[in-house]
Length: 489
Image 1 (cartoon, rainbow, N blue to C red):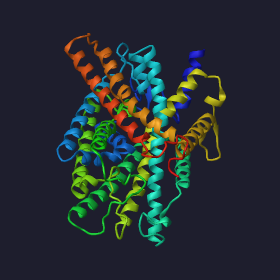
Image 2: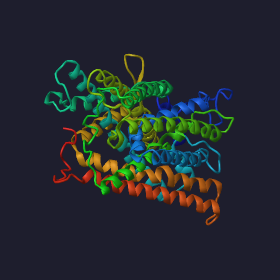
Image 3: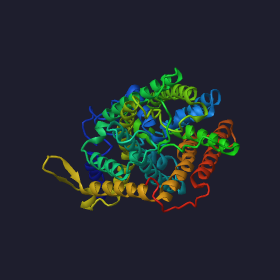
Image 4: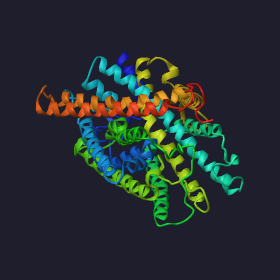
């Protein structure tokens, strides 16, 4: 009886959740009894993967990091890490089906549970939840800052200020944090939102093409000697063009680490893989999709990196594709590009966080199948069904993470450091461990040694990046670091 209740609960939640609902029609279902039958292809998976990369706030800094490393080292590092990411993604793809039963693993945590056990499962679960907080904070902060760019450009259009240093150009960030939070609360409650994932992914890619094209055009114009394109000290930059040798080394380490982290697909790879049809095998489809996605994003990043370095040299903007042309007539392009980034970040927030939020809801529904607050849907006047727990949980999550990101410096900084350190276990260590279980690789064999070298190498990169970032975060010159001071006010 208890088993039947669990199944019914999961099927009910799946109507609006990430998993397709179950059906008894054998001609319309997949091998795991899910409806609708998976129809994903290499190209649909490629769209999802590319969106997962470019919609990440960290990807916005990729061209600047490539330029920071220079003409030779920049392309070499980005190509190297894209190849390593392809390899680690292939390891994770091999873990999509359970090693004994060949049952599909619908999420990253499903793959962990079916391949590993004991403390590793609990540790991974904690890391996933903390990564959820870190990602929410990162998306919220970047989106709010880009909306501030739009507001500042509107002020310039209204002739209220003439350069970024004017006091009249100051923009209060609070309304923009709140606006982004309200938008995400509404989007989280849209029924059947997972079925709209392809539409949102395509929208994000269109926005990516728009703002990256603007940045590319401004860089070419700067190289060609067009007057009026300036790099100005806006909130996303530090405005400090004088660096000591030690600071230069730290910047290089951070750039290498950011490039490595920007290609992390582990958080969404299994979920995307669960949308593709079989045959051919899901692993082969995802390998092709991952290869095409990485080739595209690597090419775009290198192209922008070259042009940014050619345009600004060592004073290259540390983040974002667009070049902050704040003076006539380029402020208009800056405003359009900033708005496009905001739209892309809104879609990326949903695409990245929704699977993890749904995982929490599914877990609680299975643990408390008789709790109507968690499992029962109510009808609203529009004819749609609304789950009260989903409404309360997702709303409180967005509000809490937004408020903490706005007002608590230590919250944002510690989550940033945690996200850097968590990259190694989530993206490398656990996929390597699961792969060795899947393939039953004996210890001290050649394959085992190679995989351990890969894992230790990424661990070193994560630790070095965390150390360099901690110096950057907590080093405030002559000022005392205030952990409770609002970061963006």
